[in-house]
Amino acid sequence: MNNPEKAGSWSFDFVSGRINGFQRLFSGANNVRDRHRSLCLTIVNATNKNLLLDHSHFDSGSYVQSFAKIPAGTAEAALVANKQGSFCCGVSGGLSFKIEGTNTHIGCGFTNPHWGGYKFSALFGNKDISEEAYHHAKGNEPVIRKEGEFELQVRQHETNVAQMGYVWTLTQ
Image 1 (cartoon, rainbow, N blue to C red):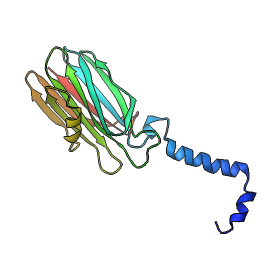
Image 2: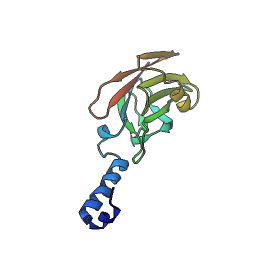
Image 3: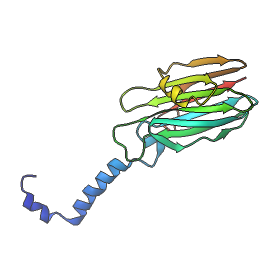
Image 4: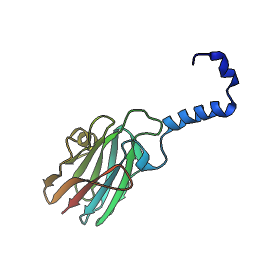
């Protein structure tokens, strides 16, 4: 501004509009698809055993809608995105589910960072492997892993509820 004295003549509506504009810029969007780098994470449990969420690890971002238990023979989806009010970050992390009645855990890693591309992973383990799953997210080509009687695969898919979606399918 060339003449700071003119600031006194600005109308309240003008100043209020500027402040509200900055608040909207940093407060995030209410619609998940409009949130920066949002993902829809779908787990298809095509087994006869329930999946119990062990742990969720976030390097960045947070849940918009989370998982709990995924009953046998069903599919559940969760939504993740950048945190409301965050700046220049996306969402990245990992999930770990215990296959009920076994000592087997599955890990689902995901990334959709501000700088970088879509990546995911699928792992088996014998404990909480949410952070390990995040660190193994390397690309977006379909992945298939086998462990004993179980097979876990992940693929990327288009969705209309988030900017992108990943689907993990566990079969027996």
